[in-house]
Image (cartoon, rainbow, N blue to C red; front, side, top):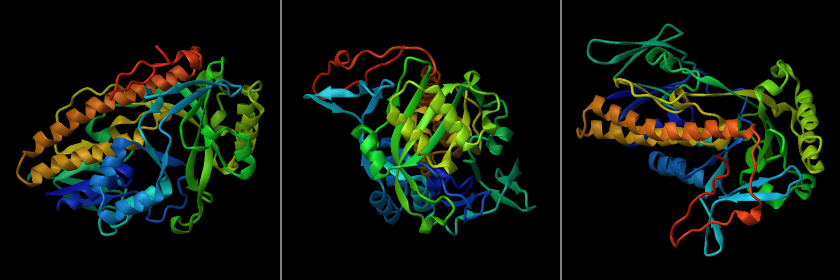
Length: 409
């Protein structure tokens, strides 16, 4: 059995490791070159599902490198008003202590390098996927822009939100604009900036600034490369305060994607004129090379389709807004589940199409839930709503159980 994966992103490379670990032949085809000219400028938070997938799929050496490079961060999510008064804390209480999931923080550059390690003979670079064809023996022929083609038994589209594999296989599934846009930036966590910001902004937990006006500011600390133009092996990794300003698309200038970084910062600061002065300083001190606007898009609710020897994972099938930080973790979850299903096929425990169908059914269940939460989070962020004062958010939790506070309806 030979598995061909289109895309050497987080999900595709994790799947490749998982299959190799279980003795399954796999080739990854990546459109970009091995040495990307620009490093990812932001970090990533790995949740329980992502951690499990990495631990089970990666070789021991890669996993140990991940453990050394990642950092545990706080498990709560906090909400403040525009004057930085704490409004609410997401999480449960047990014996007087707030409890919730522990997450790991790592720069995307470090994670990419860890996932690429050991795959030099598995990844084929500069291979731009064009289309595929089913062939007589039940296999699949993949065609590339350079005129070459490869035969595989299973094709996995892990080629991102604009997946060409999905467009051929499931052309009716298209992303839609959710009517929400973000402006994202980062500022290096210098001693001066550290002195200005609350401690909770500097422990890696997600923090949301919720004003009375229909917009939103997300703040968290991530690890990322200082210079995005050097080779990843030479990149200095440091702590950055990442901020994301969220607003309704129709409330922003139509030509916002043409704004310079300075103009984007000026726009954000003008819209938060009455907010805490330290938030203005944060925006003003941002790295101008890493500020950009983005119109958010999302996949619709996924309905069942007839399974075949072609399947999809990650953003290729359940692209979501970044509001819950779940995209990469869900791709990792896909990779582990598909590894398990294809391992059953390789060992003769399950028939191929049945295994892929089982994977897709299970994936749709959790993906639809997460995409839905992410979509509602984006839409709610630009609507008027109220959060109860902190003193009213006490939770009633029995021993050994917990529940999250519901902020919106």
